[in-house]
Length: 539
Ligand code: NA7
Image 1 (cartoon, rainbow, N blue to C red):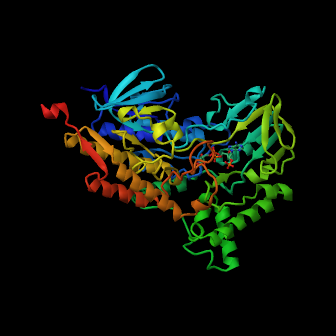
Image 2 (spheres, helix red, strand yellow):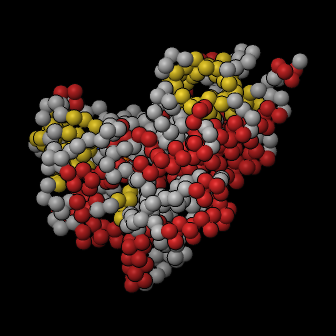
Image 3 (spheres, rainbow, N blue to C red):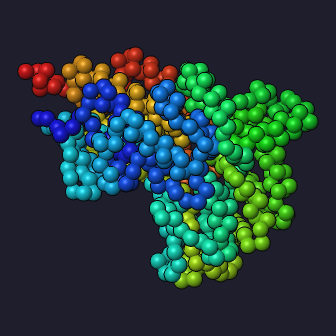
């Protein structure tokens, strides 16, 4: 039985764009569905004021094409959301993949059909498309999470989520705005919102460490140097732990004098960005070393924020710096020096209920016209489990992952043949430069499918033993990092009520991960059962 296409790709963000390109290049007929009205994925949706990448632009781009590198020019050190979305569009047009994408259309269900040896994919437009292989490029941070606050329906003002910001923008001039959440999105949005709003109340549950971006325009010289260094960068990309080269002094913070420590950290703070974390090589491994780094940042907060009580509330405690996602900001702490910006610490008072005019905490009432939920995502799994994916025997992926998402290499799940989950749980994804992680995944999946089809086979399925062994490896990798000391984070799923506590990304580094994937391929795709005979081959 033949299928409508060889491959359906879900999503047209960075993963989907490159997957369509590589799979078509390898000879597969591909169709993609995208819920947004343009390419970009997370960079299409996250339009909140101040939205910016926290990885330097020059590293946050595909590495596979010298031509793309040559012809695209970033304007700033850390690109804004609109510029990154323009880049995604530029690449999609260059690779001529736009025609393969059906926009404004969600995949709502996908069911494995053993007789077909393929998937039946259903969309929000009511279309059903059959395919041999299904590639999920839904993104790790794309399923928005709004906590079920009591009384929210009664709130008469406007409620917004940072990742679902209206396309036409929102005029907050003169408005009283509440922002709930102080992760990367909240920390980027608050200074921008405070520019026009009459009053801003920031509700903080956990104070996060944030580093100054020290953003600036990129000069022509810098761009020219970056382009000249392209071959080296490309060669180095996959040999790094993080997916891009990060400068370090190579020294241990515990071994340098207090003067040298301060001087190096001041330099790194002035340089800006999350590269600050790599200044010394022991701070990501050793709690004592990490505490010195954290102290430096808390000193900075105290030196910036004039009200000592507010400074103390903004000072993160209880988790090592870098064990939760580090934030990168522009004037976040400075914003709290403005008289119209107020911080509410939800460790001192908790939200009881929304009311028609705002919300009530255990300490009192707060009135506002607009609430901005900067409350994050059902990360790594939510975008896929919100689709009704059914594998062998009708087994639901959401049910399979209900006790905690387990995969083989972050890419495949036993019982769900011919399905590949780009940047899925158990892959480095959000812990590394995700565009580079995507390239590795797509290349590996394409090679796997070419291998399968060249052997005249039709079905590939991860083995339970391989999944179990990989799950152990993912958890063991976490134990070697300071992530294990963070009591809560979206890496662990603790931000989503009812989600099991399990560290989801692979923390062993992109270099190690790539080596493992390459070895699996060299071993004839060890851990996958590959079967089936194609009709045209058999006849
Ligand atoms: P994050 O980093 O998950 O931040 C969400 C924030 O919302 C965080 O401060 C949470 O506090 C807070 N939150 C979540 N639920 C609640 C409730 N119920 N009450 C109060 N506060 C709450 O999401 P972002 O969008 O900022 O960033 C996600 C990633 O996107 C980011 O790391 C970058 O990689 C890009 P908590 O810390 O859970 O106590």
